[in-house]
Amino acid sequence: MNELQFKIALTIMPMIGDVNAKKLIAYCGSCSEIFKKNKAQLLKIPGFGEATADAIIAGSSNALKRAEEELLFIEKHKIETLFFLDEKYPNRLKHCIDSPILLYHKGNSVLDNAKTIAIVGTRNATENGKKITEKLIEDLAIYNPIIVSGLAYGIDICAHKAALKNNLQTVGVLAHGLDKIYPALHKETAKQMLASGGLITDYMSQTRPDRENFPSRNRIVAGMVDAVIVIEAGAKGGALITAEIANNYSRDVFAVPGRIDDTFSLGCNKLIKQNKASLLEKAEDIAYICGWQQTNKQQKKQQQLFVDLNDDEQKIVNILNEKKQMPIDDLCIETSISMGKISGILLNLEFKSVVKSLPGKMFSLN
Image 1 (cartoon, rainbow, N blue to C red):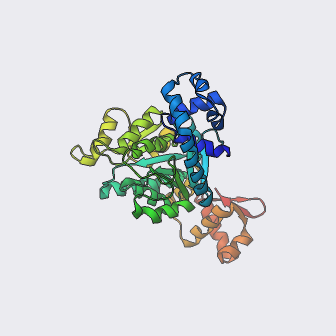
Image 2: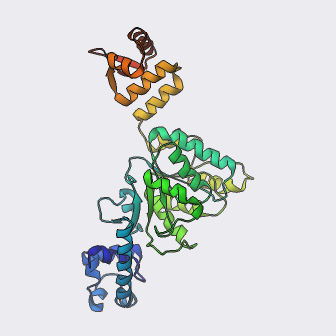
């Protein structure tokens, strides 16, 4: 047996859970060592009584057998496992007391991206809620964050689709194993996410998307991000659970306010009223509170927004944004603009403070 089999087995041992599992690992040194202990040795571990020791002894054989099956599934489908002591385990989540000891991940997600946010809300999203989600992510794209959500109906799937549309990585946190997608209607979006983000869960294959799994998976959504944004939420629901967990983890929480008689503004208004969320009006509110720095992508967007460029000028700006700097001769070739004309265009762009000339007849964005 390899160590991964013992790690998987530990996650399904009765009466253990993530918090106690970490205590066992710290005391025994590894997952495999836990399964080698007899009852007398287990009873010496602080905080573990006879019932827990008996459960470990009685359940170890079945747990290891099920873990062996899971190893075959992982290998066949090229699933990445992230143990909580691994370097690749999401660093933000690692410091949460009840974080999963093992995660199953598929895709190319950069799970420790400098800017990572969760966008959550009701499954019964209104058209206005969807528009707010799409506009918010479009405006956030200049900061290049990873967008995390739960792949559920409503605000979740809207957030994932908007992220993909704006060329942002997006991660779906599942309440079941990676052998299925729930709801099935979101399979195509999930497939696209594997190429630009990924899917992650702490549940093994063959785990059904049962109701009790969803509140549990919300700790992953809240734990692996800098901030949680609630777009629409009723008086009760998963989005409010995620916001509550995020507050307990000392994450920033934002909520979009709404009219006091709107059913799906009740939760957001309540969070703001109770000082459990900052009122969110625009993307800049998130950037300001999270302390995000401006990026080249943002500066490019600002130039496009605030400087009126004609087609030839925009063509030059696009090339310089990609190439960083280029001699005037190469710019002529790339743009198919004559030397006489391009000199005048570059001079005009200098007057607009869009480009600057460098030694050797080189040009770059200002």
